[in-house]
Image 1 (tube, rainbow, N blue to C red):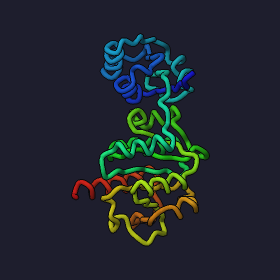
Image 2: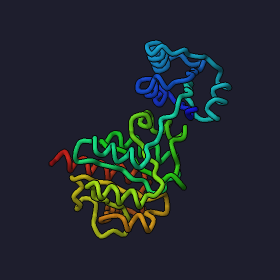
Image 3: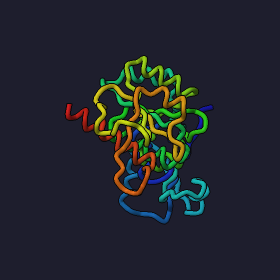
Length: 248
């Protein structure tokens, strides 16, 4: 039996209806809400031939586990994460130069959701994370990603250092991020096939991960703050890579 996922929030549910309507098992909306965004959900559900249940706020709270559901909760067949082989297959099929985002042990679902959303906007081929000691595609991640969890390929790998070596063998440069790196972000060439590696919240890159990188870069920090949230830092680096590629 395939695993199921709870998707909640107006934008996340809308993205699910638009991109994977066949995966929807049950769609429930709040009886106390009647606005343009909810009517759009009803229209999309009707177009896709889906039946919509109406429930009280209490019932929606129960279905979403008490999360901020905004009056929309869907149960769906979960989109499967890629494994190592699926990631390499995706690289072969992608346009050159490929851009990969690697997250070394991010555990906060809000950070992963934000990274998925930013990666989608920056044209990333896939987001990669270790299978252990890292957050996966939870309902909270899907909510924060605002639809990007339905479009951005997400690979969970058993051995991150080995996966980085495989990416290097596939022609990608592996670029880590570290506060003590010698090279600043804007001095680095990010225009070629690239895997950008971000460290975990508070811990940074693990030793084996850093040793697998071709070089590391740091963000210029001019204020009193020593570091940025991982999802913010990922956005800065990804869009610098995008700027260089578009300039080229």
